[in-house]
Amino acid sequence: MQFTKMHGIGNDYVYVNGFQEALPDELATLAIAVSDRHCGIGADGLILILPSEHADVRMRMFNADGSEAEMCGNGLRCVAKYACDHGLASGRPCQHPVMADMLTASMPDAQELRQITVETGRGVLNVALAMERGFARQLCLDMGEPILLPNEIPVNVTGQQAVGVPFDVAGHNLLLTAVSMGNPHAVFFVTDVAAVDLEHVGPAVENHSLFPQKTNVHFVQKNSSSQVTMRTWERGSGITLACGTGAAAVCVAGVLASKTDPSLFVHLPGGDLRLRWHEPDNHVYLAGPAAEVFTGHWPD
Image 1: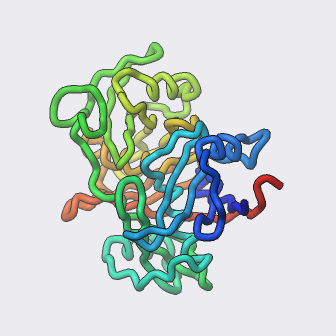
Image 2: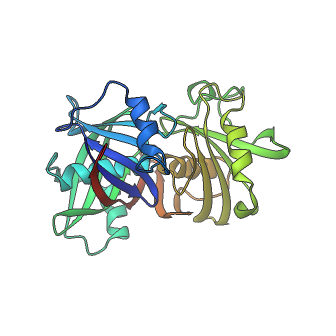
């Protein structure tokens, strides 16, 4: 099986072109094996790029522990880049004003802006691509509307939203804001994000009884109303350098908690992302890079 290693600001996955590769039945087992950073390829998980009846391509994502997830913003950018760079989707000129504006801000010298659709566990999503010499360099995602009703996130709290909920875990007294971007996220604003013992607090929050489907965990330090720094413990993968859906959830949580503006620049350990919670359509947009690292065969 041929694979491609790609990453979005350090959030790395093993990608397999399902248009041409035969896939085993036990995809969870494969995800665990290839993700192992000592005995495998090494990754935060496995992502399959597949034919779709509803979009240009389809994306299936498995975490490093073999569990299948609904969506991944950094992974989705890589899927779109692979599809266009390798001829699986030709795309069409981007005519979406918000995505075009965010891509122009990220890459002012882009030679062309194109747009494709990707089927995900959250439905069909639009991706815009800033092209240079025939390759996608910066990509913008339409992440759709955030899910805020607690029973739909899901999180076991009462009320119409889970904003500023007192939350005690692993000896820490925190305030929780929960958001779903097609997958659940727990967001905590703290004074010093570097001081958080993420290795211990992360799994305690992920597996807390408040979250019936577990959750992704994000600690966020406000630098200004338009910039934050965040660290992530991803459900099923552990500490990662970046989380795209998590950054989108942080953008929404910051507005709900009256911490930040709807347009946000997010600093993650692996790099930076641009976010915008666009009031007219209630969609969250995310812009950032994607990179192809190397290709190989499994097993060798």
